[in-house]
Image 1 (cartoon, rainbow, N blue to C red):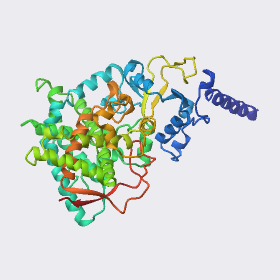
Image 2 (image 1 turned 180 degrees about the horizontal axis):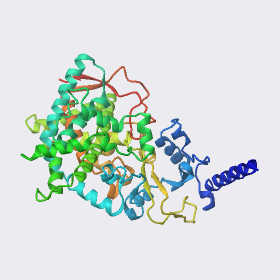
Image 3 (image 1 turned 30 degrees about the vertical axis):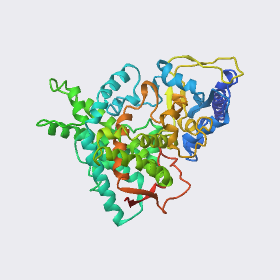
Length: 488
């Protein structure tokens, strides 16, 4: 009798998975890769054979005529991968009300501090918390941080000078992470992170704990980007309390002060400590990893393309001559070609491989193929993937996509492409909050460095360049090894 019940259970499980793997077939023969029971189309991600960005790129390339593709998540939940840029625009911008939630789940009861990040919120809560952070990241307030960031940039160059005397082979991601963590510590917390002077400093260790490309961080990404309780684990609350205590006597021109003044209504009410801590975690996540990634890959590409590096430096020197040899905040906005090189770096080495959304209310999809007439309703709760990595390497959009060519992002060339063909900072109402600050701190650091050093690829660099498959965000598999030589 026991054998009978076991057989019935096994049969029921098999029938269930067969049924769940047929969702898109039952919707009218939707095209897409064939799924496996339980694992859907993402088994190679779980086994570490491929990064999920590569898996979605393969889907993107396998159906070149499709507007969208049906696929299956883990446990055979249906989702779609968007190919057509008009539909990308609909999802991210025009029909934002139908796709206003990122496909990440944070339990606010388990981790109320990380949940303050607008990235993980939806609906009215998202509007409220994004509004609080938007008031901090205004251009005028970012400009006011210029002296603080410039001081860190000078410390950055001095650190490289000391380091290259001991070993000429320097890992680019590591030094750029030290720079951005020091900037965030200065402008968001008003402290010296000591990443250039103390190898055991706490603040850099916090940043590395968030984003290091290890299997632990891979598991965290599967569990919705951060592990529960992470903010408490990183001791952010105690740092915020210490920062508030130090501000009782005197204010400081930084972003933490702006946030504190806003939440305390300029000192007339007591600021909610959980709000301050939660937004401070957002500072850390928004200002550290993506900027250091972009800076390090930019240095690698400039080292690999000396003529482009020379053009960047020529523009920089011309701008500096106009301001008596000094880098000023106003001068940053004249570094047009440098910014184009940054955008091209984000195209080729986007920190985020996909933009995952959730359909928040039923939406009628366009026909899957040009010859189709049937329209399918995408049901509320269905996953929607915008394959950023695949779009950025589509030769129909970017000819010779593996060539580093900043000219693509000069104004006249940028206008020739659809706006949503570049998603380095996302698009629409969920456009990256820290975009302006990221460009601000990156330009200051890169300009200060390139004015003093010529960057070359180290013989220690492993080629071809690969990224770590275990990391949620972009990370080089074997580092980005560079040499820095004095510039005349």
